[in-house]
Image (cartoon, rainbow, N blue to C red; front, side, top):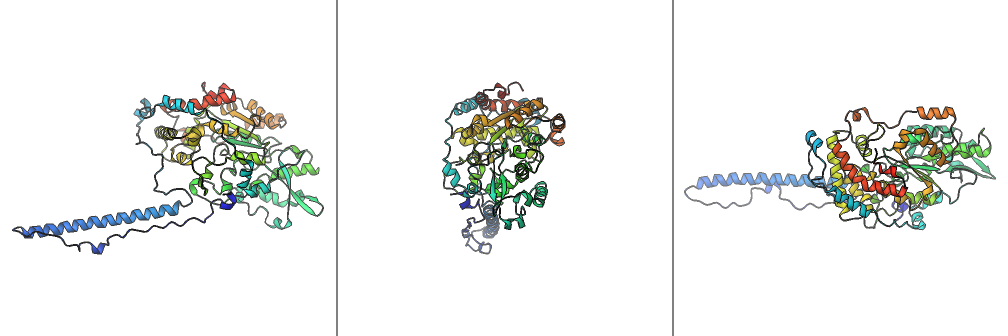
Length: 532
């Protein structure tokens, strides 16, 4: 079923109804005959029977009320979760072991989790399962068939002589009356709404006329910073905007390829509304207008070298949307990945990946998973609580791995939703190998946050060379290095201190086989993170 056919999970949901079994009503209680025995203690027996009858009636009334409450909860679960798979009260296939509550003293001494998890055995199992054949890339016709509108809007070839992937789209004057007003991104970003107000005022002068037809320039991103979360992608993107050839990009994380085109913003909130590809392309209109000025010769510089980009940190790993769409397929694996679509529309795209040690603190920052936990979990944070959640998550992953492949567990939405912490996001090699099935190695630049923080100028120059943009002026370099860090740790989170040493050791053992494979594929031992 194509995405357009299912309308990205529209509100045509199945109505679930429950027929209640007939229950004895309260007024019938006490009408059943009660057998009594008459002897010398007849009066006592009668009193006992009446008391017993009243007791039985109360039990039945309570049972009836409890049954009614349970029925209400089940019905409510259908209503609250009818765009998801399963009921609110349906147990996950991945059940947590009984929680081990850690005191500060116990956690500091030996809360490693090894009492229930043989980490050496688990690491050996992971290492053996890391040796697998590359995934089978879906046929291009199957990718195109999932979203006919997407591939009808974006052409197969782009304009020559322009660095960014751009093309001319015929423009109807009828659309000028509501230009950008229906764009769904403007409803959720005041900054982008302001940009659209500016674009609207001088939109007509950036149109291209050929005969009786009018065209507008459309562009896709030239580069994608695809991940990972809490690995410095926000800081990198905003520093790149200081370069004159990159500065006309407006939104860092549209999350269009992984979520919004399917109609999801946060999966826990259910289906919202699908963001059409036209709304996504509007995000790059500021750059497109400046590129058009270069083509028309209306600018002092050659704006044809301007490049577009975005930095949605979900692009590398998040393919959960497929599990929420109606489908007859079996298994937890998504039928397509985000890179299948990006490569199909734009095979020459530049991909940047920023990673950090998935275990240790680095460069004054904190552990990626711990950082993730502190950033997204609002209340009741503690190092002990984080440790317990890590152990529980590893336990769940181990349970999945005992029955399935490594890739199937990493992409299993039910498993990831059951994990107290997003453990799978640190398994970088699984996602990286899948990106290598469609993009050439030369199209992907992999950076370490440790190198970025230790020597910003050298790392940024590497990025500039990869994107083929010119060097900055001395003034530009000074502004780039002076810019404060983005997405730094909250003050309240800093007061919590680092994670427990036992948690760090536990996670280091878990991530070791993944890091070894990554370092081997990249031919770079620094990705072992053995010296951090």
